[in-house]
Length: 315
Image 1 (cartoon, rainbow, N blue to C red):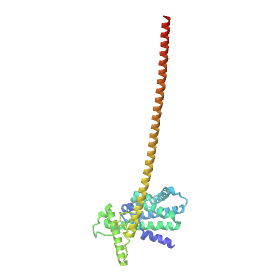
Image 2 (image 1 turned 135 degrees about the vertical axis):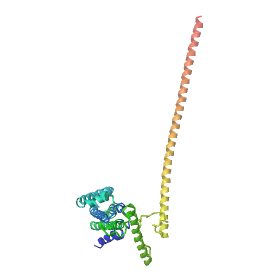
Image 3 (image 1 turned 45 degrees about the vertical axis):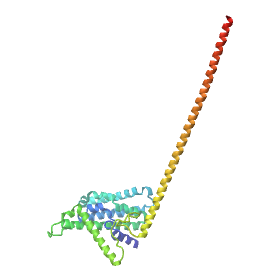
């Protein structure tokens, strides 16, 4: 059970898909104009994520590796269709409000990412709790953003009037730019808390960022670990890889050149032999023709001389 609770904590707090991994930004920024929309979208995603993790983990040893991505998408699309029909039947207003984003759960990177990274490599029960944890973390993120945008932009809280004409609502927060502002403020707030805790403990803060820079050579990037030993090791490994790639290209080029030269030489030799043969045949034919012509002329001359001598004798 400790592993199951660890998966819940990991999805809700440690690796929250919205505020930590920055995944699923399309529905996060598009449907959070109100708290109800954020909550409904999050719960729908949670249901699809949990059931798809369950099925993918059950059949992880059956699905061929070469077709695993199409198989995952087919499973996810099946559950999205079921959830879409249920919402259309029981919550038609929410379904109409979310619109096409219900169908776009199929291509949500959170669901496909958890299927590829966790469900396809672990047992059924931990995979189910991983889906629940990630889904609840996504729901929490969307609901918080929806509450802030609705409260500031419309003056309501879950559809109920909250401000009672205390101030004029800032309508920009219910529009597209408001989603970026709210998300940026929340992430900045979380990072400020992490920096304060790190200063008290005297360690490096664990900031919310997209951490996918493994192997990157840009050591000046703010998201990189500036440990000199690690940086040197990364640079040496990259240099070795570049040198190996260069040698492989040179070897392929030399083989290509050798083959080309060999073919050229063989063609040249063939042409030379052919020319020599033609010359030889031409000379032989010429000599034979000359000999034949000479013999024919000599015979004709002899016959002419004989006839002349016979004519003289008769006279």
